[in-house]
Amino acid sequence: MPFPTETVVSLLLLLALISFVCLHQIRIAVGSPPYRRPLAALDLLRSALRRGAETGRPTHVSPGSGMPGGVAGSGAVSAELLAGILLAERAAAEACRNGAPLLVTSGNAVAHLALRGGVRQAYHAHGQPQAYHPEQVQLLAHDDSLAYAAALSTLYVRERLEASTLVGGFQQELLLPGEEAAQRDLPQIAGSTHAQALPLMLLSTPTTLIGEEIYAAEAYLAPPGPAQARLLTQDLLRTIVILLLILGLLYQLLQLIFTLPPLPDLS
Image (cartoon, rainbow, N blue to C red; front, side, top):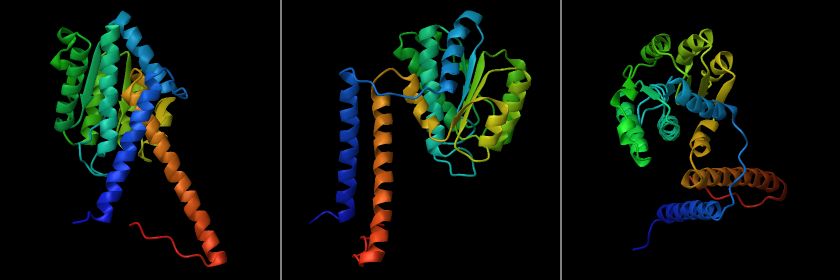
C-alpha cells in the first residue's frame, strides 16, 4: 500500500531538516563558527551575571506568565514561552560558571515546574548541584498576566537585583515592571513578539530583543554546538521560504503574460 503524498513530503522535509542541522553541527565542530551580529541586550545579561559574582546581587530572569501549549490572547504561546525557558536555562549555566546568584520567576504553575527542572539540570551539568536551591525559582502568580506583573513590580521593590531579564510572551502588562525598573535605575532586558509590548519595551529600557531575536538568544549564550546549528538551520529555512515566495510571485506575473499553467495547490 503506497504512502500518501502528504506523508512522503513530510518525511522528506523532516530528513532535510535533520540533514541541515547535522551539516551545521559539523561545520561548527571543525572550527568554523558562524558570524552573529551583536545583541546589546545579551551583552548586558552576561555583564550582570559577571558582576553578580562580586556584588552578591541576583540576576532575575523570567519567561512571562504564559502556559505551555497556550494560545494567543491567553498568555504566551508555546514558542515564546519555550524561548524564555531556554534563555533561563542558559542564564543558569552562565551563573553557575561565574558563581553568581540567580533568581527565576514565572506566572504559570506548569512553566514553573519546567523552569525548576531546567535550572536544576543546568547546575547538575556543571558539577555544582549543591549550589542550586529551590527558592531560586519562584511562582509569583498563576495564569494571570496582570497579577504576575504586579507581583514582579513588588519583587523589584523587595529584592536588590543586579539586572532583570523579561523575555517571553509578554504583552501590555510589561509596562508595570518596566516602569518600576526604570524608576529604580534597574538594568532591564525585555523581549517579546507581541505588538502590544514592543512600544512599551522601548519606552522602559534601551536593551530589547524584538521579534525573532528572542528565539536566537539561546544560541548566543550557549557554547558552540547544537544551539548554533539550530539557529543556522532556522536562518537557512527562512531564506528558502523567502526565495520560494519571490519565485512564486514572479511565476504568477509571468503566468498572466504568457498564459502559463497554474502552480499546484499544496494546501
